[in-house]
Length: 203
Image (cartoon, rainbow, N blue to C red; front, side, top):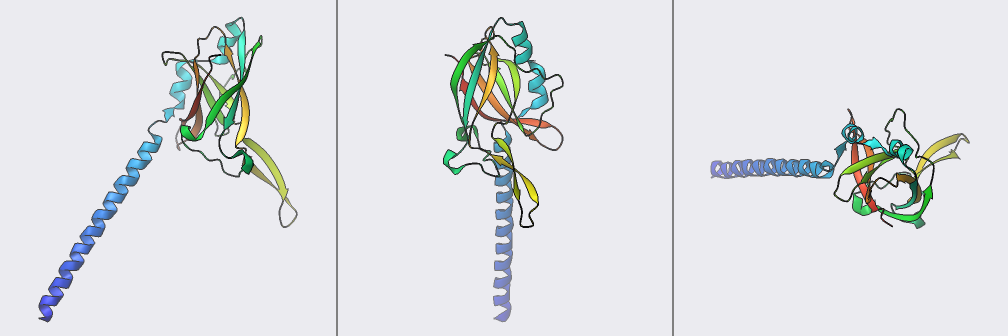
């Protein structure tokens, strides 16, 4: 009787161990699939920036350009600056053109473009989806603050504003219908561009 009971207990333990192992495998597969889903839309920064020209180069050849002021809502404006940005999907960012004006100047030219997490990349896109040109913009959400610690020593801190604005200069002879906006992300070996939103530029 005791031997039969121990056999049943042993069988139950083997069953439970196998079930737990299977559950762990399923969870790991689900986590891996989720990670792929989150980064599936990321693009190679080197490929994007080398495939089209800077908008600054195109502005220099244009007779006039349009300066767009774009409002970026990335969270609760009433909450004020936060120490860590809410880097979500494009659905969590709202971009709106608030003003536009004609300018004779050119966009800032990047002689040796160096990507960093403190920037955003704006890509002008045509009506058929073709990419026309790009511009690097400092992430307008970032503010540097200093405050005294318990010992009275000033300590620097980076904060992110949830509601900001930035400008982009688009040459008038570039038939852009939309601006796609990306956030550079370092993956350990190279920069990737994570899409964070878009905005139409037609008047």
